[in-house]
Image: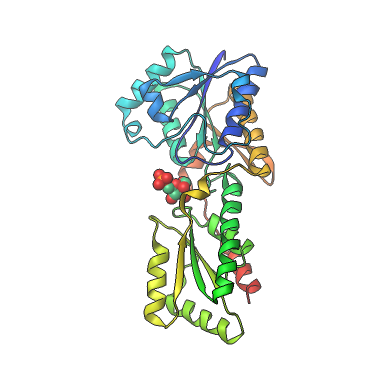
Length: 322
Ligand code: F6P
């Protein structure tokens, strides 16, 4: 291959820039020209492409967001728009793609490959860590640390006022952020799709904590399909008891900020491996990690399976928060 392209797609995640940098500089080291597609699939349809040189990557390894911008494209779900995108790529002489995004982005990439024979390698970039076939996704570690920083601050005020706080974290239907943040932040209970707890039980637990001398409590909830579930929970607790719970929804701050060292290292490794795989003639794969080792996982497996969370961290958090 003489020319490949890279794009970011779906929700942004800290470390995407480090991944772009790794892709561009690895391609340069292998004498391959590299194009950046702007705004994900939207830019692919609208032909928004720029040439990326190694020096364009200066000073971005530490920056959150994505210099290529990103987006979620409803149009790209339709074959006629994918045909326009494929035509744009072919006209630009692009022979292969590196897609940085989540499983929804990978589904789009698979469609491009099956309908228009454009080889693609995926790298999992999402704060949710909900991608099958990899232990880790770019941005997860940073999001967990950002949420933890906020929870540590909330803990100060919870303690000063003897209050109960319900903190809602991102992750849509997955509970990976909630479980990690809950354990690291000393939460009394962590509510996720894998750990649904009846309100009566939560009330009993909060009352018991008070009798044991605990004056403040932190509960963590994963957001679910749409943000706001923490308010419903606070209301349900209020109705069942005289306990007043304050709500804090952390929201999009979890997607921003400078990536942690962990995410920069992960992004650099995955970005570089993705280019190597593409140039060696591989396609339809995601580069991920299992037990800190780089692995190649067929995109079909990634998109047809769900990465399910378990309750191990949640159970431990419960034991440790007495
Ligand atoms: O997938 C990343 C994520 O931040 C989810 O945790 C969240 O539910 C969703 O994106 C929010 O999407 P948007 O920024 O489009 O509202």
